[in-house]
Length: 170
Image 1 (cartoon, rainbow, N blue to C red):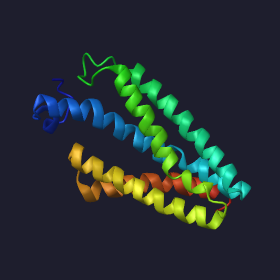
Image 2: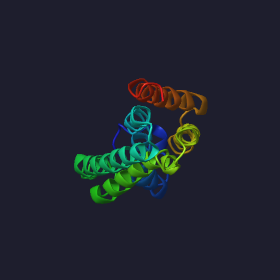
Image 3: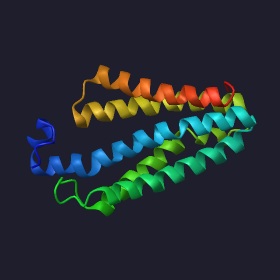
């Protein structure tokens, strides 16, 4: 096992270690990227257009584009032989799908015709997404729960604020 892995991963039984490295880590990477990277374009589009369906279209495009990009990046970054992270195609699919899912969860409320309702629901979904990411990091990556909540909320909050700022404070 490579020495760069955290001790807790090296100490796991092989099937658990493989699950964390080959499934959880790529999914977590995708969820984090999809949840955070789509915030700014989605909320900027909502604020600039004032039209929920336009915001939905931007969120859909950002989510699918990010999913494809992240899936390819993960699949092409490492063949898994040295790192033990598994088959590139499997990791790429997991990362890409999780990225698209992470971006779509807070995009779906914009199918609601009332912008105010859509925005408030999307805000709530973002908070739930970020807390879920923190819980996954805590459970599988053995991070400190308060520390990981702060990290995820601060990172997501910064990108969210940029989207509101660019969109004219939707």
